[in-house]
Image (cartoon, rainbow, N blue to C red; front, side):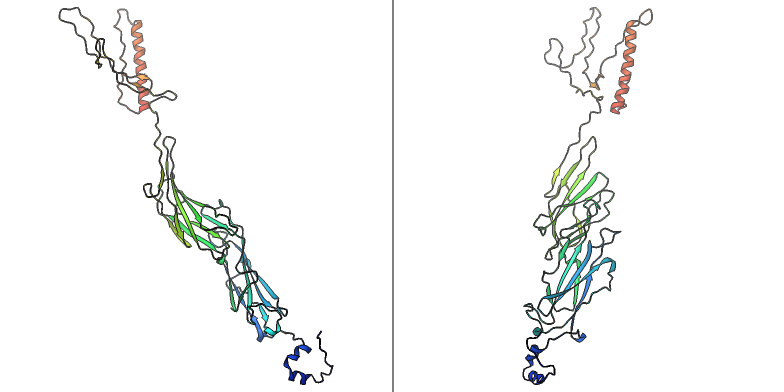
Length: 398
C-alpha cells in the first residue's frame, strides 16, 4: 500500500509527475520484470584435478566445490544463489551462469556500503574428503588439516568480474613430489629414512607432525609424494627434512647408522634428497664393533687362552725352558729328561700333550699297551674335532 492515494481516473497525475518526477514513488511501486537487457550475469567455472581412484598420487582429495553469488534486494539484504560442482557431473565444459535483475541505487534501501549496481558478491568453498591413512600407501602421504576451506569471507567478496573461478589449489596446498634419493642401495640390509616437517602451525594452532618416508632395496626406484591441504590461503610451502641411514647387522655382527642435519626446502614440485655419508659435516654416527664369536670353543664351554710357560728348572730362577741333562762319560746310563713343551689348550684339549707308549711286553698286549691304543684313538678324535671347529686342515694327526 502506498501512503498517497490517487483517483481511479488518474486525474491530474500527469501534471503532478511532470512537476516533480520524484513524486512517482509516492503513487507507484516499481516491479522489475527481468528485462534481459538489464541483468547482472556471472559465469562460474570450477578448476580442480579430481582424484583418480586407481592412482593415489594423482588428483586432489576434493569431494566437491561450492559457489554462491549474492546481489542486494529491495531492502538491501543480499540474495544468494548457490551451486555445487561434483566429480560425477563436472566436465571441462561445465560452468554455472547466475543472473540478477539490475537495480539502481535509489531502488535499494540500506544497500551495502561498498555496493554499486554492477557489483555482486561471491562466496566459494572447497570441500575435501577424508585423507588416506598414514600407512595405507607407503609412497604417498596426504594430510587434510581442514575439511571445509572458505576461499572468501562470510559476507562474500565484492567483484565486478563476469567470469569467476573456483580453484581447489587455493586451499593453501603443499605438494612435494616426486621425491627421490641420490644414492643406490646395494642390498636389503641398507635402509634410508627421510623425515619431513612443514613449517608453521595448523589453523587451530597445533604443531604439524613429522612425516617419514623409507627407501628400501626393493622399492628404491619408486618416487614418493607428500601433500598437505592447510586451509590457509596465505600459506607458503616451506619445509625441512632430515636423512637417516641404517645398515642392518647379523646375528654375529652389529650394524651401523648415521643421521644427517636438518635441511630446508622451499616450494612445491620435485625434490632430490641428498643422502649424506658418515664422514660429512654435521652427521651423527653410531658405530658398533663386530661381536667376537668363540668359534674355537664348544658350545657352553669357555675358551682358555694359551699362555707361554715361564717355569724354571729346580735351582734356576732365571726362568726359561729346561735343557737336556747328559751324564759324564763312564757313568751309568740314565734316561734323559725330555724338553718340557708349553701347553696349548684348544677346545679344552692340550694339543702338545705327548703320546704315552709302553714298551712291548713279552706276552702280547699288556695293560699299558691297551691304554696307549686308547690314547691314540682319543688324540685322533680330538684332531678331527679341531679340524671341524677351526676349519684348519694342517693339524698333524698323531
